[in-house]
Length: 244
Ligand SMILES: Nc1ncnc2c1ncn2[C@@H]1O[C@H](COP(=O)(O)OP(=O)(O)OP(=O)(O)O)[C@@H](O)[C@H]1O
Ligand SMILES: [Mg+2]
Image: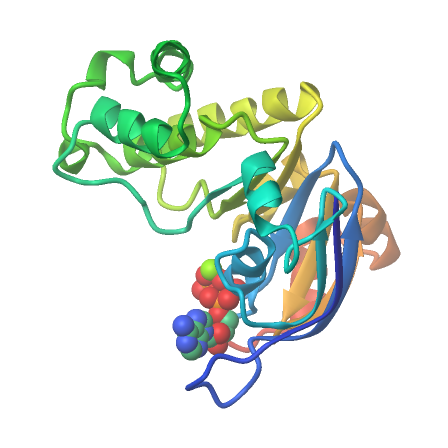
């Protein structure tokens, strides 16, 4: 599903590299957690994988295709749910979804069916015509996810999809990700909620200061580091220092 070799990215104005010689691989059909403290390089890594950042060193292959050579093909098969809500606040949810669907050139009739199905699935059917600026945090997150599902991606990459949402929205989002994965699709997601990652991920990759710290199945890592849970593994490996 994904192969990253010696990935290196330093932003123009930055003193240090944000991703520094990072290499890892993920198999298809898994839910994978990309974890790390604030500023670890998660969003930068995701942005490179989905083609939003084009200037980097190293090799990235998504679904067997090189991101530098076949970005357009990859973009048609994957989708990203960004850390920031990427919806127009003054448009309704339905208008936003129609807008994104039209950009993706999805057939009008199919698009309407897909939107209706997802609005129902994510509990937004009765709020479809409400402006996004009047949505709660959880509703915005759910609508943001629907926008990324419209092209029926094989790989869904989500950057903190459950940040700032209540337990009900979180549970709905996580249940959907499990269902989507059970249908044969792959998921990469970032989160600071390690209990959540432990419960949903088949595998996690912990990074810090742009470098790989460890990769493995949560239960195996917990055993290997003789801890009670993934959070203890995380603290054991990344330390207690607060990040700026
Ligand atoms: N556009 C940019 N220009 C310069 N530096 C950047 C830029 N974007 C990110 N950085 C820096 O790169 C490093 C990694 O940032 P990144 O956003 O990838 O981390 P993150 O793991 O997603 O953090 P968080 O958990 O806070 O979302 C940080 O030191 C950040 O300040
Ligand atoms: Mg981030």
